[in-house]
Length: 378
Image (tube, rainbow, N blue to C red; front, side):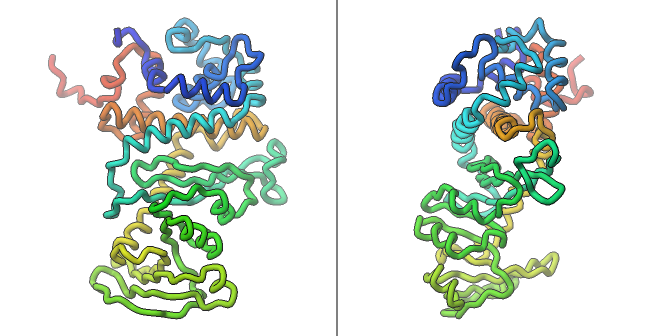
C-alpha cells in the first residue's frame, strides 16, 4: 500500500528507469561494477541535494542512520564514502547529462500551457550564465584568474516553468558569447539575452535558423534608420524603427534589417534600447519579452540557495559535472512532482518539506499539503 512506502521511494518512482538504464548503457557506466551501481550513485547524490548534505562523509553518516530503511527506499548497494567518491571520479558525467535531458523533455511538456508574463504563443528562452567560485589549489583545471578558480554555468531556460533547456559547464574564462556557437536553434522560438551576447555574426546564425532573438543594443551602435512606426508613448515606448547596421564590419556580419525599439520604464525612468529580428509582434510585447529575461537570474539565485552547486564533493572535472547535472535532475524532478501531483506550493516549500520527511511513510501528496493545525478536526 502507498501508506507503507517511504516518500523517497515515491519520488524515485517518478523516474523513468528504462531511460536511465539506457543512459548508463550508452556510456558503459555499470561495466565491472559489482555492488554500487550508477543508480545507487544517483540516489545518494539526489539524497544529498534534497537534504542539503555538505560532504561525502555527511552523506555516508546520514544514510547509515537510516540503514534499515535504505533497501525499501530503493538503495541496493553498500554505501561508503570512498565508494561514492570513486563513482563520482570515474563514472562518465554524461550519463547524468543525458538523463537530465530526458527529465527536461518531460517537464517541458507539463509546463507547455503556462504563461510567463508576455503574450506569446511560440517558445521563449532566456540565456545567461553564472560564475561559481572555486579554490585554485583544489581545482587547478578551472583556472579563472591569477589566484582564483571558477566554473561557469551557461543556461538556457524555458520561460514557461523555468525549466533549463540547455546547460553548458565551462571554465570561468570562457566568454558568454561563445555559447551561441553551440546553442541548439529551434525554428520559431524566441531567444532573450543581454548585451553580453551581442555578436552580430552569431546572432545572424539565429536568423538563418528561422529563430528570433531579443537583446539590448550598445550605446555606440552604428546604424541607419529605414523607417519608423507610430508608438503609444503612454506605455513607455519611445520609438519603433527598422534599421540596418552601418559599420563596415557589422553590416557584413549582419546584412539584413533589424528592429530597434526604445522603451522607458515608467516606474524607474530607465531607458532601454532593444534589438530584434522579429517585425510582426507589437513593440510593447518585445519589451515585455525582454523583461521576462530576469527569470533566468532568479533561476540561478534559486539553485545556488537551495541546491548543492557552490561546494563540491569532489575536485575533478568529472566529479564537478556529475554533481551539477544530478542537481539539475533533482530540480527538474521536483518541478515534475509539483505539476503532475498538482501541488499548490512553491519549489522552495516543496524542498523544505522533502528535506525532513524523505524516510517517512506518508503519501507524498499528503506530505506536500500545508494544513493549518488550528483548522484540523478534533
